Length: 325
View 1: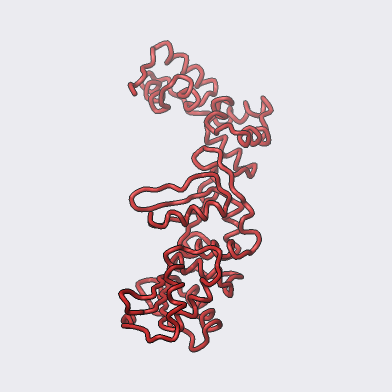
View 2: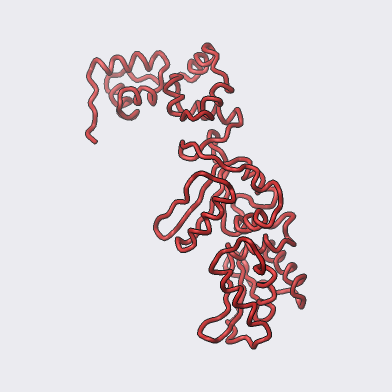
């Protein structure tokens, strides 16, 4: 697309409008150029003046543009850029007004919807997805002007699993694919705050700890699907194995769960770099796999297939046992 040039007369008009309170962003949209282009042209002529935020706020107050009206127009479908152009201010100021009013921002400026109460009631599916987010997800609290977000990334081969997550959340946005990875990211303060009540917090890799779901098999199936390994062996040599990696707190909770459902001694934890690992073998691995996966309504397809194979191998000798760390 060829660059559009501004005539000297247009530069003068822009300078006067900018001094009167119009933002560079709204002027750029009107004249079909970038804001940086306008700033450079004004600076060359010594005409550039900074945005007077106090004047903008005064103008919004003068025209009685309340936070409620801005929120209503945004929720009706207007973008922050369109609102900024209409009000003669920056989109950042519109964003701050929305944040002050507690309005959730749309991802990428597009109008998406999501069920913000998806985690409010503990069900088989909600417990599973809390576990999956605990292991393989992330949550973020960005700077003012944007809503908190949650996301999950998997290998492209498992992209159908993220579609199931998207359906669970009733999210109308897309799962994005690229470079061998698939990712779902959702902006929702309600969902992020609900997840925090179960222990899913930012930067949780080394500190993750379940709250209220530590005895829920559906939660642990989600954790294993996210950060675990399930194998019934290969080539006729059954080596039934469940391995889980994560924080010490989370794995200690899983060890207690395993002892409760499968009996025997409490599984040991093995340090691995700055996290820990836990291993289950043979009939004990089969028993735990059965508890986690038998009769479930949601699971990662490839791990469910391995777990179902393990059900039929109970009582057989385990093959070559992998060396412990």
